[in-house]
Image 1: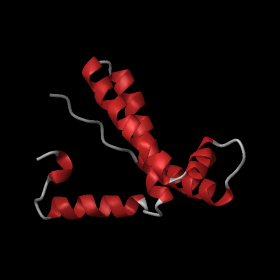
Image 2: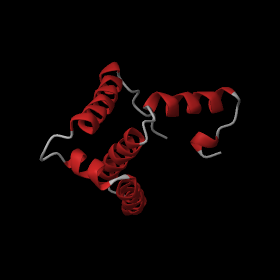
Image 3: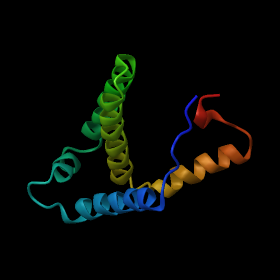
Length: 112
């Protein structure tokens, strides 16, 4: 069994910067931005995209090519963050919920 590499401070900082960028794009709506186009399409289209990326991630996991899984997981995470930004739900709230579940010994977040 391999041990997962720990997230670095740089990794966590990037997630924070990406979340901030999504909120900036939502407010400023710059022309030519993919994120702007998705915000304009609304929650139904964003949610649909999250579902599509989730299915593509599952399919990639069956193909046993790590590069493909990583790419699809990145798409899924980005679109999930986009959906959360659309709903004004900060990543901190999701992480706080995960921490609360873990603290209680309720490990639903890790598949148990």
